[in-house]
Image (cartoon, rainbow, N blue to C red; front, side, top):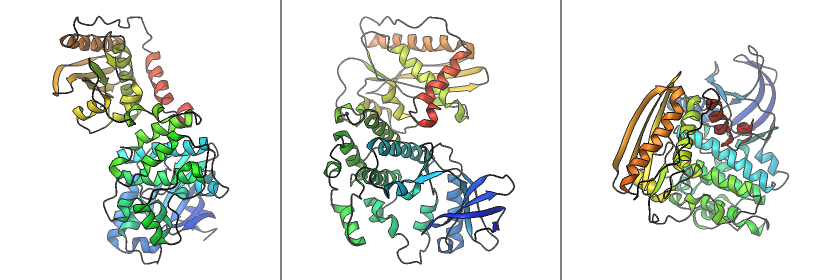
Length: 456
């Protein structure tokens, strides 16, 4: 097919292939850009229902917008009925190609895993599970950016009548126990698969290696993998603990979501191997009863602007209110790094409060439209769910500093029923530049991503 033109794309060279189809580097004739064109094998769309399911799934994946997810430009079929996907083309190599040279440096392995977890979290929030995370589906660009490939294809392979013998064997070492048991697949299966990949990047070998598929299945279901230190003596204990949690047989014992996992991996990576399990984010330590005395968590304010680009603004408001309340004497305020993992969480407030070990919770929302901003927030007693105070503010953006101060004062007043005497907050009253403020929030938003694209 090299040199041919298909649906407006000139095929230049074959760059990959396997059970899930052939991939060509191609040129978009109309736009002049390079793309990756993937042709799906005919047996993956053997009937109209399977084809419709695939197109629905792939088109859903095409709406994912994240630096660590390969961009999908188009999903369609040729005149003779062959399904194809037009994806972004990136210079780089897959993790599979990197592993062909041996284990990766610990820092590189942790960075790849953390970036992958970030991309997966974005997909999982949209209800999309990858189902086929493996080294061949993780591409690292020349600039070190990880791109997750093949969203939407694995689901088709599960549902379509596979006629080729052994078509799914290639992914067997990365399948979670619940997949092998025929149970429903959810984001926890992606966490397991990423755990296998991380183990492989660190040690150069699979955690559940065996001579035949049946033995691999038995190992996944019943055996514990050898310790990382059996093959990599310098692997820190915290990394051992993290990989062990990712590879828990019972999915309920793995990380709750990929944002929590990414935070773990970044802490381990940033410490350069000097980290201990006690240094990991506190939410992974055993949950204890809340300590005596009032304690407060400001949960991430929900962005109701209808524009994801405004996410930085709602996150910034959350952080600013945390900073204001941190000046209250006699009360423990949970840090931003611990509360941000509950962004878009559907967990009940009492459960969140138990995990954070707090007596009170602040929750709210932000809606920004042009130069107007509406903030609503409430102050809740965690044990009973009783709302002690709530308020809405609909003002000009120029009043944002006054709103933040007012919110902190109202919460301090509500806390007077808990603290005796009532706290006297040392709130921020210095003048600040309203034009610079949104830019500051946006910069801090990207800084907190702790990723190459964020720093850029």
